[in-house]
Image (cartoon, rainbow, N blue to C red):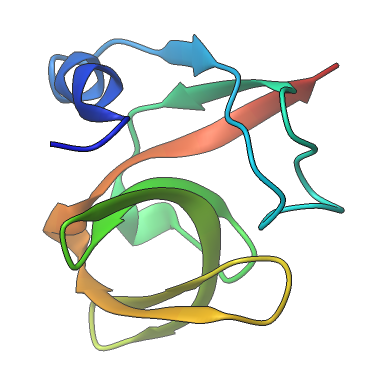
Length: 100
């Protein structure tokens, strides 16, 4: 299981979670170590540009929704990389706050 396993379980139980992700793939939107608050989400309300906690090919990401088509979501980082297309069931929460 990935780094987000415990956060995903809590989101699935209806909780809002906060954590400090590390890495540079979301630089410009989320800097490494910033406190991110992620809440459960109704995927029908998601829009391109939203930041979501999701799973793509067994990997967990806090990445951007790049496109939406027929109930599927294209996920990518803020540096131009596309992770792939996923179903709504692979999205666990939406980032609702980013703090230093």
